[in-house]
Image (cartoon, rainbow over all chains, first blue to last red; front, side, top):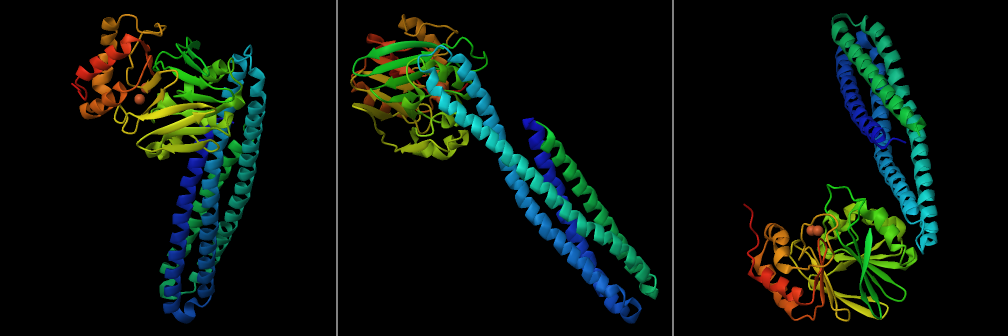
Length: 201
Length: 242
Ligand SMILES: [Fe+2]
Ligand SMILES: [Fe+2]
């Protein structure tokens, strides 16, 4: 595994996730706005009200998921550090082994060598498992984002019946749609960054 | 890595250094090993670059499991940045180093090795029947800094005190003290911050019976050169940066 690209990938995931968080908060704000407008619009925006609730739910769900993923990403960073350290240590121990070839006590190195080799494999396995787990979680974030886009499309139809509120409700639908597509893009980038490191060796 | 035996009695002192394969841009260091019947203390084990040649060199004289103790005179990378690798090699060992530096030295990696904090007034490290004294040498140059004195072997491992910047492959003992002074002056004036601390150390060390003064860089001082060094250092103004 290339140490450097691994750290860069993990750091860029953290950055993407923090963007997703900001956007999810925007959606939740947009939902609150929409709710207020829909309330004022009364009968004319009746179909819009449950939609705003639903959008708010999706935003909350996204925030919750991203929170959990953030925690996982911090752990992934720690695992990447461990893996990097153990790989470096293992290489150094191989070097000691070569240098100590003729030493009287060379054989006393056997058990540390084996232990370090085992640790390296263990760290690598943990890292890989964690990447796979994170990939799954990222897949879950895609669901609310996708649903939000469908709902945004529905909102537009509902908004068209809202008379003088048409424009403001349409703006809400638009911003939800934009936000959902930003999240979709960010999460997609996270996933491809992760899949690169998960298959390199 | 070259090895020189500097004491042979009920226990041994080995000096490692002058590694020919060392990259040119890192400072050359002396590592010391005290070997008793069943245990070894590695004094100022060195930088991370040195770990492989150092451990390989030690394996000529002792098995890994008998390296039970490490000592770091202070926190510098040339002293102890190899710690993370020793931590992998010696999971049951102890590291003796200043308690003040613990949170810093742990950055080098110290998960399985036990960190034994040394109090400001020093202490004792016991290896089988050998007792080594940990002598305070604060501010020379590090703010929390120790030497190791072996009353039986009459060796004072003085850390950066007495250090000289030498050509690669320099002899291991000072032969002409007057010629050696030029290689030490800048190092001591620039790195040692306090005349007061220097005074306290000289007073303390004058009371010790020393055959060999063994610094972490450059050559060791033997016999009369030990006192010559103390006199020279006594007269030197330190804490000077141009
Ligand atoms: Fe130093
Ligand atoms: Fe040093």
